[in-house]
Image 1 (tube, rainbow, N blue to C red):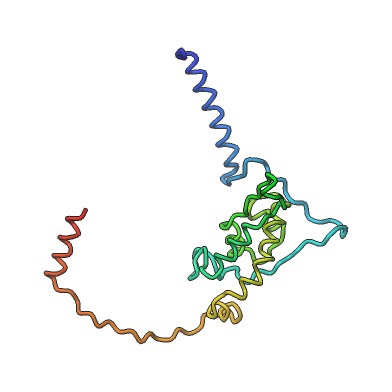
Image 2 (image 1 turned 135 degrees about the vertical axis):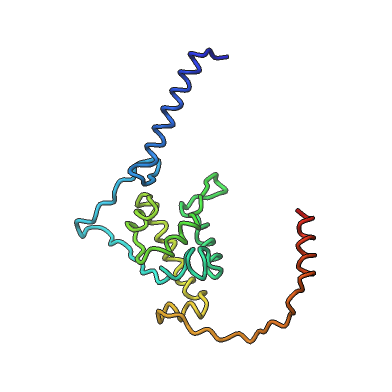
Length: 194
C-alpha cells in the first residue's frame, strides 16, 4: 500500500506525463504522429531515379460523399488484395512477417489525391518517404485493374465529366395505403417488443 504522500507524487507524475502526451499529440490544433515526421525536401538535383507520378482519375469520383461510398463495391477486392501483398519480401515460413498496407489509407489516396507521388502521399498520410513509396506502388498496381472493373456509368462520368441521364423507372406502387386501424395495431405491436 502507498501512503498519501506517495499517492500524491504518483498522481502528479502520471498527470504530467499525460499533459505532455496530449501536448505532443496536438500541436497548433493539428494532430501529429508520435514521432516527428521530417519534411520531405524538394529535389534540388537531377541525380538518381526520377520520382514516380501517377495520375489518379478516381479523385472526386469515389469517397464518403459520393454515390459509390468510401469503399466502392467494384474496387474493394482489388484494393484489399494489393494491400495484402508481401511488401517487405519476408518469408513467413522462416519467421518473417509482412504487415499489409491499410485499405482505408489506400481508398483515401484514391479519393483525394489528383496526382499520386511519394511526396504527396507522405504529406497526406503523415508517413516517411519509404513507406509512402509502398502506397504509390500499390496504387500503380491497382490502377489498371480498377479502370477495368469500374461500372459503365462511372466510366462514362469519368470520361465525359457529367452524369448520364437516368432512365425513368417502369416500377409502379400497386400496394394500398394501410388503414388507420392497421397502423395503430402495428404501432401497438412494436411497442410491446421494446
